[in-house]
Length: 581
Image 1 (cartoon, one colour):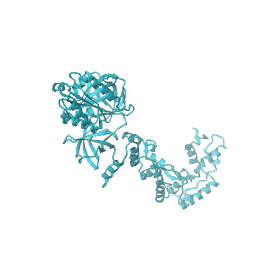
Image 2: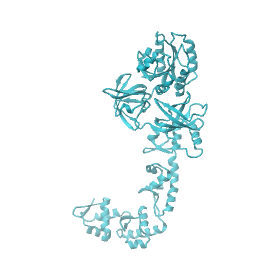
Image 3: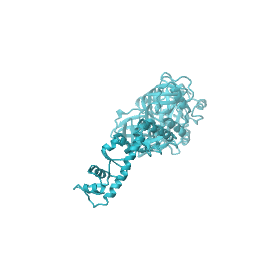
Image 4: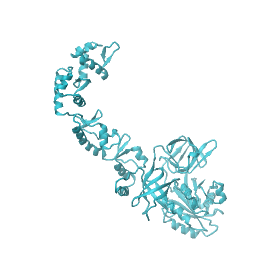
């Protein structure tokens, strides 16, 4: 399916033309038919000669309903510009065309209506010349009369050719369906309609509305139930979990996790601004309309503070309407999570960054370099592709070269900590994380490289060293244990050697002693030595037999036996004997 929107002045025959093309009445409200003008959005559809099906969004032409017009045009990729032969180009025509130009619409068809009332040739030539100066360029044109039917077959053929040239929508893209109508159907419940500009929506899908997750109970397209609808398409969704009173035009149904809602956004104004932008503006995107305060940063770069958060992505085109005039301007979204501007000159620096920042993958790399690290899901939700040279660590993305830069800083950080805390082998991981300004301790492992290692929650030298006096005392203890592995020094001996609680803890952290219990310290490898001696005695064995095998006192044997149980070397049996595991 294809979707196209009408555009043009009130009473130039847009709705009549839609009726002539489709045989359907696009004006939904009795008030619209009574007054003879479109107040709200109308919808109709038809099958073209090629078999292509097209939905037509009929927008109001009256200037008082320009907001409704924008809601219909916003999500639609092509326009049917309507100008009456008996009236010609008008101010409202110019305003509608300015909107299309600002939105960057590149595909359009000109229909000069009421050809039965006046010669259409002069209006056709004038309108084509005006449109040629816009984003639509040189457009095909057809003169038509909705009353006599003259030109309607030619218009259908021209519409067929126009739609055949539209770029294909991405069916795998995340869904962002801007709601343009919400109502209740008896027996079905809440129904919303909108133009599906990208992605696919199917029965059973879960979509996000604000902070709620809703279920799609059913899908209709062009008045018929379907299992799934693929962009581009006009769709009606039957939703479970929401009342119609909770919905309004401008709400968006989103693929979970695919969009970031924001109320602060940096944009670049399209084209060179003719004058300083207004302090306040009305922002339009899709069918949404919100107020915004504008802060010019420098040149064409502006920061918008939205009155309500919107699900925006980098690359979106916004339309800004000055509430004090009829002027509209376009703005391209450059950042949906912009940095705070606190320092003097920060606004100008930010504007310079965005002015120099490219688009696409190169822009993504530049933005990631500025952020340094970010969650991959958040980065994609901003609208950026993942740069090829980005480093993934769990859920995180690191900018190219960042890990090497931080790795180079870690040795000095560790050395500085050791000078301040000589009895500790190195800083805790959390200290390193804070010093490197990393968001997650998981990332510390990426920047710790030999000769540094992670050990027991700290960043240490692979061969950790102790202060000289402490090292000499530990060496003496280890020499005694080499001769008698189970002769743990007593507390007075340790104190006489200058080994207090802190020094002994440092020796344990460095891997030079093993703490079996309070005041019981043995050499590394003691578990293997204890196992070897126990293997030489009958199984199971008593504590007394183990003590004799180890050749040590009860002061050492009791805590050592319990420590071996905890280490999984031995198993204590119900009768208080033990055996090797």
